[in-house]
Amino acid sequence: MAKAGPKLSPVISVLNMKGGVGKTTISAHVFRHLYIRLKKSTLLVDIDPQFNLTQTIIPQVSYEKYKQARQTIQAVMEPAPTASIFTVTTGLGPPPNVDDVSIVLRQLTSDHSINLSITPGDFGLVKYSLITDQTVLTPIRDRFLKFITETRAKRDLICIDCNPSSSFLTLCALMASTHILVPVRPDRYSILGLDLLEQFINELPNLVPKPKLIVLLNGVPTRGYDPTVENSLRAHPRFGPVTLSTVLHTTKLLEASPGYTGFATDKKQQWRITPRISAVVDELGTHLGLT
Amino acid sequence: MSESYTRICFLLAAAGYRESELAEFARAVVSAGSAKFVDDVTERQAFIQQNKNRGSKGDVTTTKRVPRRLDDSLAEKVTQLLVLEARMTKLEASEALRFELMKQGGKVPPSLGKRSFSDWLDQLARVIPHSEILHLSTRIRNQFVRQSDTDWSLK
Figure (cartoon, rainbow over the protein chains, first blue to last red):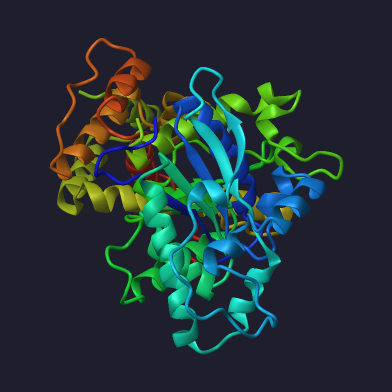
């Protein structure tokens, strides 16, 4: 059921300063499964200008229609398109209602109020990384934050898929989030991305309270695995206790394939990965206070 | 006496030391303290391992690569870390976890008793998050298994 009381739903950003760690894969497949397993209305927000999350689950033809109808994240940031990629709209006004800028992807047949929806991504967001004057961007950030705050009263969970950089958009996502899910691969580079992310968060003076980190090991090989990095992560005094005990293994089922648009847990071979994703969802649900 | 104590007594007996040497050894252990004793033994284990590797491959591998099984349950993971890798008995593993929880000031679960280790862990997992149990288990495991860190490590 969507929330009616004063308690606002959690907002979780999927983020790591390192690219290629599985942020989009996890945003799509883990949260699709969370919606059905925990029966929670979940909104996916694609804030990455590359909009790979959107491309993973929405066919191109449908996306073009949504974009035409301004049902993308761009409409959350600004009410109308601008002539140039170097300018933004002034006099923004209030943010849109979530139902006007989101697409329902799945819903429970027994209770239509519980659904999985997405606010699709938009390449237009790239302009915010080209604008250097932060005062120009502040009203846009505030509009986005207001949109998220209002949506927290209407959904059980909001998941924001982020791009792997310390950009204006990352800042927007961090300021809106109660939690950050950090996917890491068991290699030195993505683990160090975790350090950098924590440092970045700690050095942001306006970010109060700081969102809570949750770490998920992704892409763990099924053969010949050297657990050195995992052992170092799990033993770490701050990151160890928040690293989910379930790991996701390397599998073709979770990889993007040219001929398939949709969720991995809807594929014919889903039984191979669903139990593990269920275990991730159960742990995640506990950390987020959803169970 | 614990099972590990009995096992080490057998090892020393099999090595054929005289009584006077054993007495001297026991005094040295008491004087050094248990932490120093464990450090000394693990240092020599690493030395032996390095020499084995040098002899067979011509290189020295500084990272011991322990094949990790595919595991699904928390009990299997903790057993892998503490029993298979740290070479603890299940009783020792449960006591080590209880000790870590005690240090944290949290509610300490009852001893293993006659239950199976996996049942005991299941009960523990009802009050302590899985991630926390694995964190503590890995910390304990890392004290016993010498493993070089990656060049770049978490701060």
